[in-house]
Length: 426
Image 1: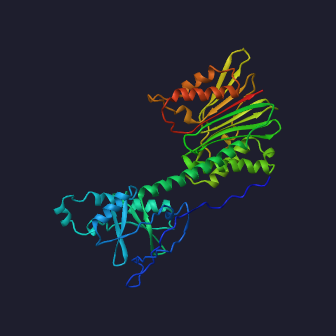
Image 2: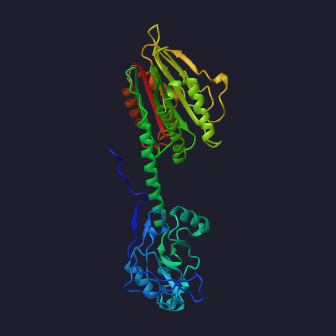
């Protein structure tokens, strides 16, 4: 089935309004003439990323106008937070609800209060309707940090277009960020779903518990060739979108080798070295990726483990004496993307297959997790969890892990992504 075509850009339509026409006495773009076009209406469409999408057109009042008229308009519309003020045919600023409604209330004070211009904010910010909302928000914070909650004027093509509120601008930025993050999450979930091993020799179960919409944890499982499998877990330094972009690099690296038929030409050491070279070449110097890559060679009946700055890798098995054993492979290599691998790092750590062989990997988001009392779910708690469930299948182990995490956390916040991988040789 062909992929469904979707619009390149979602558009919202700005409501109809009377558009004042630009004019000034000197012929320069610094004022707006307010002409009454009772029957003229203009419909303007804006993308959701533009300031114009939050604009509200409010009929301006004259700077010499009646204060009671302004008060009446505020009372009639509880959502109205400011009114544009014009003088000599041009909009010169805004009067806020707060400034006007807090004016002196006695008759004598009212007489002394003067015209509506007395309550005018002459430092009103002006934004372009076609400007990006995120850039507009940044500019407001930079230029008006002491009054960031003030309303502002919105112009389009040097014409007064409407007014906007800091709250509406912030909400629009949050909406767009949310949509972007949800889109990034969908891509990440799709990439993670594309690398499952379908084999009768290995039973693989993965676990993801994201702290935010997207993150820097990634799992890759694949068959290099018949009898040689790789299961790997990665943790990119950093968080959110920046980290998720680096996980896309990991996915692309393995996908390119797979679709190009190049996996079979790699052994464990050469694959890890090639990945390290790509990360060194395609990422900035400050970015690195912790990772644990475990290779199952069913022909040689041995494991090869490369722990590159990652959490300890647990290998559980039944020893020849019948006892349940666990070998813990802590980090022996630097994280990927920091420096080239030398000859001494090229072979990894190996061990032979034993009955009931099971491998467990987890990101440090698990052992750094804290409950409501500030207690960490440290390595000792994880060991107790794993050792007490020696005979569990990967699916059962991961299901128990989810319950364990939820019970430990309670109502505490999860600060980092939690990723785990359980693999059993059948």
